[in-house]
Image (cartoon, rainbow, N blue to C red; front, side, top):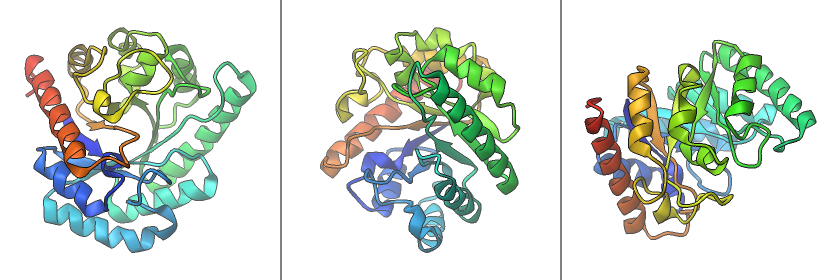
Length: 265
């Protein structure tokens, strides 16, 4: 497995700061945030300007880009995401599931939309990944399995985030076994409690919450998963830089120890 940080953790700072301190914390790579309002890193409306800067930062910090995150399913926005992914060399585009929990009509709309986007991802030679998300049409393991059954496109995969499964009142370690063969990306963070939000940024650091992340990584390893595991901490845009770095470093230490505990490193 390859360990990375979603640059949204450094959303209050420029893209180079995210690269610099992700590398300093010892990560293998980085995920670029294209999340409007949470960062000004991979701004898709300006991706042709951003692309050469991102490629130069990859070389400068010896930090490959594992993925990007862009939550919208808007067709025009996703075209920009796919085009920028090809230009920069980003293999995975993560987007949100859309829809509303318990609403069958929006569930089907999400499936139809994601199926079309998977076709576009395949056209560009990249992989589209989607995760279960609190409040969305795909929000737990049963709805995830329905999505995976409906969309079997080779350019489509699951982005697995244990914090959302935890907040859907499931055990992520048990839940992951049902979907692990379709996982192509992992977002990881901890969570204290089962409320709708994942908590303050420091409490999202791995090891601070209730999720058995060691067991979670063990199941990934036993299943042969070798893809990216990217720390995604939201709500950090107003934090001072030392605290962002501390969250990154603390979480990387926990991830490294988890990999060592299951003999994956």
